[in-house]
Amino acid sequence: MPQERKRLGDLLVEAGLITADQLQSALAEKSPGQRLGDVLLQKGYITEQQLIEVLEFQLGIPHLSLFRYPFDTKLFSLVPKETAKRNLVIPLKIEGEKLFVAMADPMDFFAVDDLRLSTGFQIETIIATKDDIIKAINKYYDVDDGFEELAGSDASAKADQEERITNTDSPVVRLVNQLLSNAVALKASDIHIDPQETKVVVRYRVDGVLRVERVLPKHMQNVLTARIKIMANLDITESRIPQDGRIKANLDLHPVDLRISTLPTVFGEKVVMRILDLGSSLNDINQLGFNKLNLNRFTSMINRPNGIVLITGPTGSGKSSTLYAALNKINSEEVNIITIEDPVEFQIEGISQIQVNQNVGMTFAAGLRSILRQDPNIIMVGEIRDRETVEVAIRASLTGHLVLSTLHTNDSISSVTRLIDMGVEPFMVASSISGIVAQRLVRKVCRDCSEKQAPTKREIDIFAKRGMKIEMVWRGRGCSSCNMTGYRGRIAIHEVLTINEDMRRVIMNEESITRLREIAVQNKTVFLIDDGLLKVKQGLTTTEEVLRIAISE
Image 1: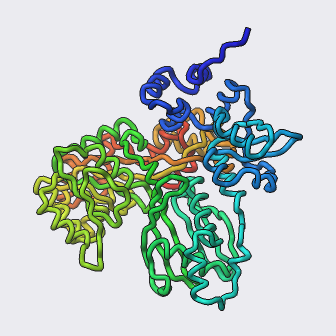
Image 2: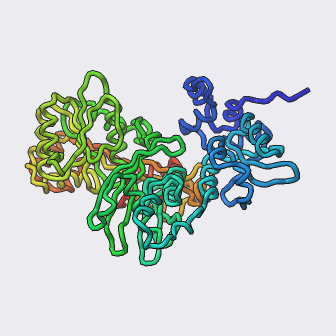
Image 3: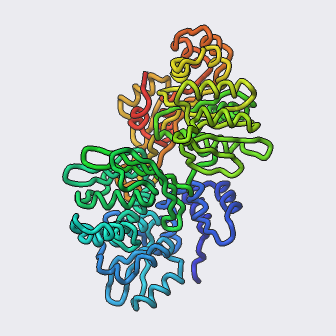
């Protein structure tokens, strides 16, 4: 009698990977035709690796990590790149009349049939993660294809040069597309193209850390820069001054927005591309990593009718994502929300967004004055950079508007002194600010290779200093999912400072920062280092990561 096959959801619950409640909520959200596994991945309940291990057990099909697999590139002619990308499949080896292929969905019988007909082989499937397959396709298909053509003589005609950087089949266009596809597959936030004396280095920033992706010969520098400039509508003849532009692209049917910045250096123009992944923008305030106390405090700040809420931190600490999540939370038909940004990063429905344009005199301060005539309830200012902007913002908050903005400071308390340094009167700072959130991003321990370890003596001391105990820490061994780093993805740590009457009095009397800190401690404020260490206790990150961005007093 054939054994009855268990359903995927039941297997995941049995394995202890998800709870019965999580399964029910995923089934309720699942749209017709959507697979349960995809919903669970989207909600972050399981990782792809965990899903694959359960599928392997359920379907009896082996799974494989492609991280260091010795691919035979001759087989790639059997499966064209478009087919490989569309069906998420990559050929592995041939044994007799069998072609072994790695697939993200081995139950896709149409794709298997297509492969059987087009190759003439019997198809044997092996499961691999979607990320693994996309990385392998980007890495091994078309690799270094046509780089020799790029060598071209430097004295080539201008028309020929133009043809090379605009023709979709030319090697440089393929190279740029490949660099972008790879970056999106690796979930990189920035691509750096650094010209050096004898070479050009391409680096990706993944989870906040830069790493070299590839080194290109020096002769490719000019065509590569020209191609990127053409895509961003920049002046390709001007290489002596910095330029900024934007590219909207669809990479593998995925909308991506790129911010381009060029900077003249000694060895040529350095290009940095910031990738804004429109598909994965975090718009849910509950997914930002706030602990319960901080979330309640932040929610009550943004639900106030007036006052200024500041989000502080260095560049790349996720301030914009938190601002957009806050706007999304309070966005409704009853309120008029207007933002002024430089540049507008994500477009949100139902919100009027204005872009700063210095060339025509549209600065933050000038835009802010015009916004006040548009009867707004909530105003978002991308960044407070100067005295003029902060004064207009404070006046707006004192006349019944809620103002959200960002500021570059080290922690929440030093934001108060920063505003006073800008030349704002202390009584105006005290009466207008309702709360300050300091934020940093730390790398998360990879869920596929994390293992429990006993804490070191130094870790026990660090926790003891902050009045906490630690019994176990989690660290990643390193696996193909996290490129052997032990970390995958990032999470925010926060310090939410609510300005109460005692603090207002201290600010007005221009008392010391130490006094402000004492009141913050009395109010049970969770400082950056404390929130980070709490996340270490939960197994989300490591002590090294927290100490990298937060100072232990």
